[in-house]
Amino acid sequence: MAQELTPQDRARRVKVLLFDVDGVLTNGDITVMPGPDGKAVEVKSFNAHDGMGVSIARLGGIKMAWVTKRKSQAVAIRSADLRIEHVYQGQSHKTDALYKIMADEKCTLEEIAYVGDDIIDLPVMRLVGLAIATAQARPQVKAVAHWITPLPGGQGAGRDAIDFILDAKGILDKMIESFLDASNPEARKADIGQGNM
Image (tube, rainbow, N blue to C red):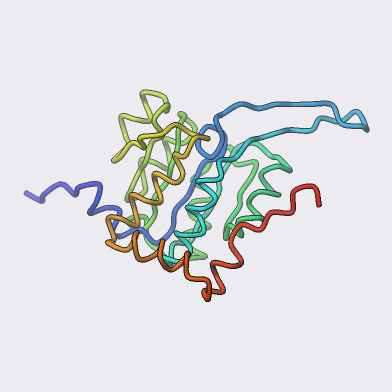
């Protein structure tokens, strides 16, 4: 009988990390305000710790993707700030994006991690090598997860997932020191958002 893999065993194989957005990288609130032209403007709040985690993960060779059902300019702006390699918005069936990312990155399902919080994430979570649920995820999502973040979505769950993977690989502290190295050009390019400039 084959021994069950631990979450750390699964994390050590990860090459690509996929995130849902609403409820994972945000707290799940969707704030809609009227713009000056009368059209809706959607506002989302992203956690700075998650952004720092993306920068550290990149130094560790992890590719990242955001896969979300909603379409939002806020997601486009924030993902551009963080230089996310793959961004798929408007995804009713997230497995479509999963297979495109697999092909682009030439990786296997076992080499992919996915962080989700609601039932729309279940099809992908059931397929990938490491399924991660956020602390406030729906019970059905936690039931299929290999690991659950200590923090809820929008409050550092993304960083929890990144730290867990890099720690399992034994490189978390090294990547932090690499980020802090003033001579590292990659660290200098990390998360330079434009804001209202």
